Image (cartoon, rainbow, N blue to C red; front, side):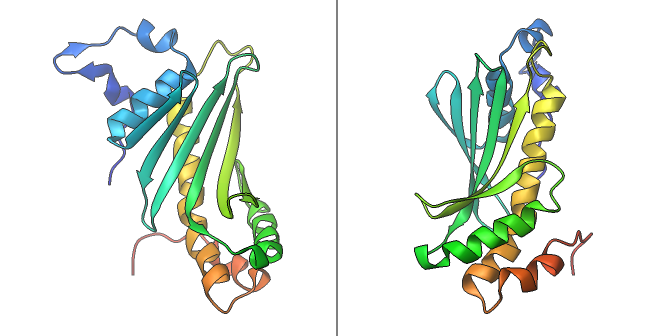
Length: 179
């Protein structure tokens, strides 16, 4: 599924939105517009937080985004559609540590409370005067891309006969095209 850019969001029906709608918007509002444009199912918990169900290649991921006004920080995380057993916590912790070594942006976290794995990033915007539509699109694309790329590796460690050290090196190699 091709994702649409926020620049495509400027056109609603036959009328063009005013550029000030994007300049004056809170980053969470830009995220909401992007999520709606993608036609992802959206849950708006409160004015500064939203959750979107994002169809992925390997499952239904959950994108969680929260705007912290006082810190001018946008917290972006993607919960992967996979869980682990408590007895796997040590291996999952090793796995997230190894995955984090090669990440360009963000980090993987094993949540012991929910037995889930997520990839997170905080976008610091203090003094920047807000976020641009391109920044919002980029950070969402990167977080979702990291989740999609790591999913098969995580799955092999949790459900297969492989240890994290054995599979991470090969599982995170960038491939192009399909077999």
